[in-house]
Amino acid sequence: MKNRIINLLSELVKINSVNATISGGPGEKEISGFVARYLTKLGLDPEIQPAAPDRTNVVALIPGINRNGSLLLNGHLDTVGVEGMDAPFSLKQEGDKLYGRGTYDMKGSIAVMLLLAEYFTHHPPPISTLFTFVADEEDRSAGMEYLIKRWLPKFSPFPSGGIFLEPTELEIGVSHKGVSWYEIEVIGKAAHGSRPSEGVDAILPLRSALEELNNIQSELLNTEADPLLGHATLHASIIDGGTALSVIPSRSRLKWERRTLPKESQNLLNLELERVIQAVKSFPGNHDVKGREIFVRPPYEISKEAKVLTCLQDASPQSKLVGLSFWSDSALCGKAGIPSVLFGPIGHGAHATDEWVSLKSLIRVYEILKKLILFFEVPVR
Figure (cartoon, helix red, strand yellow):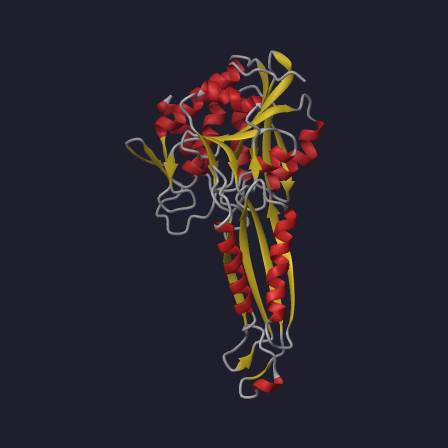
């Protein structure tokens, strides 16, 4: 098994699948072709899905003995960029550590999924098993959006649960934070720096916005923490404005990110945005301000009674239940009615230059998920 995982992961790492939204990133076309060919050689009939222009998913089904339910396995095909890495597309082994872009996040798990597909083509699983490989998780999740909106609604039987093979250090991710992005824009009036009375400074009012964001952050840290996820947080992300040192700035913009908890309401987030807008409006001057929510992804928490969770606990009783600070496609799957957990290998350096995954842990993930599928119980409906 060790050599099979190393050889397969080496082939996957060789393929540049940096997300197409990153400069120079080719996207998932080549790696989705590799995955589709691999599944075809197993005798499966994979479907390549156009998740977005030049962005593709691959899905395949292994029918189960019991046709009354199905289980979904998921991994994403894209990686982040490779700036600062010497040989990002060459797998290097140092003892148990396998280095290369995507080894940890998450081509190691893609290799595990392909090997599970190979096993279950020869040993029909008790429950139908969906192998889903999606595009664009590292940006706007176009692949998962396509899957849940255009493909899964037509699929029968609807999955009883989902397992997302994100790296979790062999722990079971039962919840994770959401993410919301916001911006405010301040509109002033340009003038020569020697004649400030003729202009309206659009940058100075951001002082009030930053102060209000700091107030909100303090309030979040003083509320009761989630037992697994801790506190909700926010941070100022981008400030821009002005055109030249000798010109009164006519426009400025501030963007910030809010990490959300499962029990927080959208109304609370809307009120926070309004507080920042009002703070800027209250700053002395004749400026205008407008604010908006740019992007939102919901937090997620699985029910403790969900069958996919209890079965995974049975298959891996030593694994702790944990909350995860990062966002995952599992939230979209859960929102679509598929209870989902996260479970994956040990490693280090997701989005970093020294990314590696533990070979032993990949083997362990394979063994645990094989056991789970073999003994998965279809929930009574």
